[in-house]
View 1 (tube, helix red, strand yellow):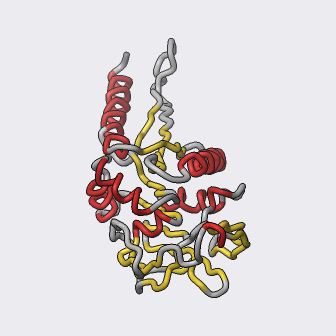
View 2 (cartoon, helix red, strand yellow; view 1 turned 45 degrees about the vertical axis):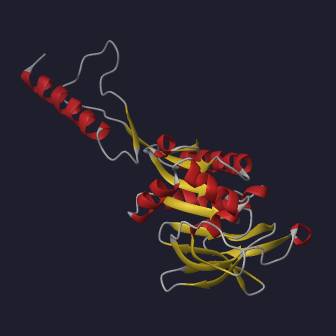
View 3 (cartoon, helix red, strand yellow; view 1 turned 180 degrees about the horizontal axis):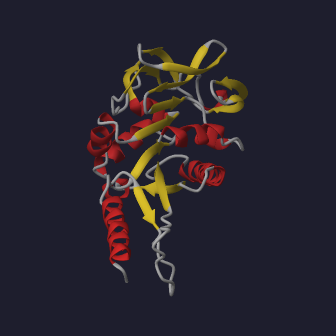
Length: 251
């Protein structure tokens, strides 16, 4: 092997080392520039780098399976639509170690009081707050998840909020289970989508840095603040994965 070949080979190995030691929030997969059984050409070096972003669904209570199925479809769609340099992977998150390498986290609908208690029991609460506050973790809360990421919960019914997003939210604002309903709403950046409301909360007020993304009959049902997304309805209960693709794009 010539001196130039040794230089190029060493350079490619250095690239591999740097990429594999980058930020833990991103999982990098690299492919060797050498094909098995072939000689390194002095004039050409081919290095394919594939960035794999992992998006998680909190797997402790609520509509986990529905969210995971929709997220998997969204990840496949966006991975196929890309130019090959970026891929997305859906994963389940149940403990702190599962959070390693995750760029985004969906907190599903369910029972906000129960989820809040389980976050403490599994040791996830403080780690989520720490990473999200630093901007290392995008978070999407749906229904109960939206309650848990809100800075303020108004009304008598409270929950152990993470206090991340500058919104005020009221639990069970639309009534009991029998008062659940399905409609269509206009979601900014996506268009018209189906929306299912099940014992849904209501976003009563948003802070200055919060962008309202959707309303239903004049009431706020979706909002975003930086890397935080809140929807009071259940996109995972429909066949439309538009909001899941929107969130993946935030991560």
